[in-house]
Image (tube, rainbow, N blue to C red; front, top):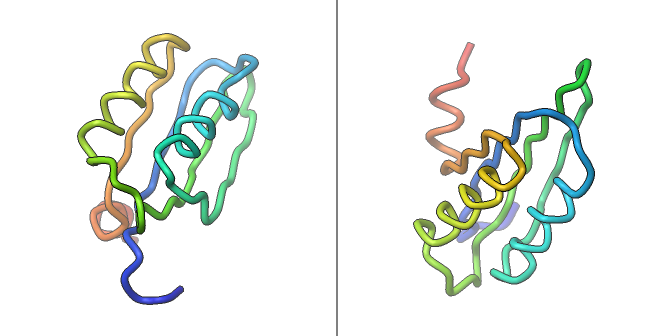
Length: 94
């Protein structure tokens, strides 16, 4: 990936239901945030997704995006977190 990227991870966990990916990807599109990679899985009745997104070029503040993701999480009864790539890497080292 080129330098100057502002990479973040978005994690989503909750009961599977329609519209999860659509709601989150629509928000990212509206905020001019690119989805670099996405991995999702249904585990039992639970939906689990990790997205790597790039905020480079977006004029939106991370706190505003975090708030919008929290609103989506509340609407759909999901746990949604967003964090910078470096923090994610530090927390998930083996």
